[in-house]
Amino acid sequence: MLDGRGVSGKVNNFGLGLSAEVGKKFGLTKDFFVEPQAQLAYYWIKGKDFSMSNGMKVEQGDFNSWVGRLGLVAGKDFKDAEGNTKAQVFVKGGVKQQFAGKQKLYANSVQFKDELKGTSGYYGLGFEANPNKKVSLYGQLERENGKHYTKEIEVMLGLRCKF
Image (cartoon, rainbow, N blue to C red):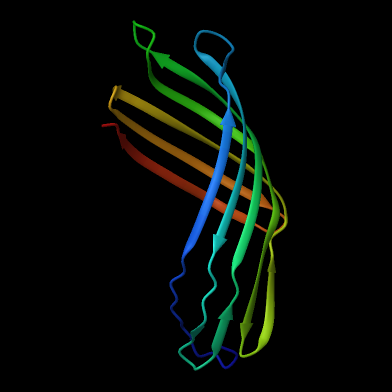
């Protein structure tokens, strides 16, 4: 570490999350829409003690987090002759507030604190395509930055199948 030698460690943690989200899609025209959204989420990760490759002892406390989010999605629907949405493109943006989010960590009995409270903004764009009623393809690019947190561009691609 301080002497230039690499140090490694490995730990697996267990966590749980619970989230409630609401939103309502409003049609501006036949094809264009806006959707205001709100979300409140709680996350908990169990702390776990472990040792580093150089013998350093790490004691990790539990992590608790409450996050609120207000956002807006604006986009365009592409519909078939029957009026069913076959594809959608959108932009999104909003603000997240971390109400609680701290963790204590001890390395060889020296305490370190992580404090993540604060506000961040996020923005992105995406698409969804529905070739039929049972299959959806989707993709998103998103970035977030704030006082205590920066998420570089995140890319999400997926396939959703309904049974």
